[in-house]
Every structure is written in structure tokens, then in C-alpha cells.
Length: 102
Image (cartoon, rainbow, N blue to C red):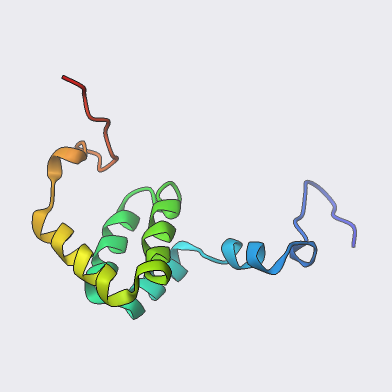
């Protein structure tokens, strides 16, 4: 197949695990987080509020922790984090800021 202009990705040439990674969009992250638990869904929702594509890797990482640690344990950890809600780790625009060394 010839492309008129620009580049085109052919996912048939990718290994299966790479194709699966490329399909993990913000909508997929939200849907998967809702399946795993309400606290996980809340954390992913907060991550996706502002600059969803910029924070997509973070959301994928949170959802991926369920494979390693289990959904119940991850949901409990997200609930603890939500109760704590450390606003000092974020600036006014919602992007993470760096901690200063004393």
C-alpha cells in the first residue's frame, strides 16, 4: 500500500506485546482502571484531567501495577494515597513539580 504523504505505521510488523502497548490509550486506561477498582479509577481520572497524553505513561504504569501486585492491593494503596492527597507535590497547573533539596 502506498501512502500519499507522510509516514504510516504498519502494526502487522510489530511483535504482539508492542501492539498491545500501542492500544493502551487514555480511554483504555480509564476503562481498565474502572474494572480494577474505584480508588484506581479515581487516581487515573486525576491523572487524565490535565494533559492526558502527557500523563498517559503514568496512568499506564498505575494500571500495570495491578498485574504485579493484584487489584485489591493496588486499590487499597490508591485509597490510602487519595486520603493523604499531597497537594504540595503539584503546582497550580496540575503538573508535578520537583522537590527542592535543603
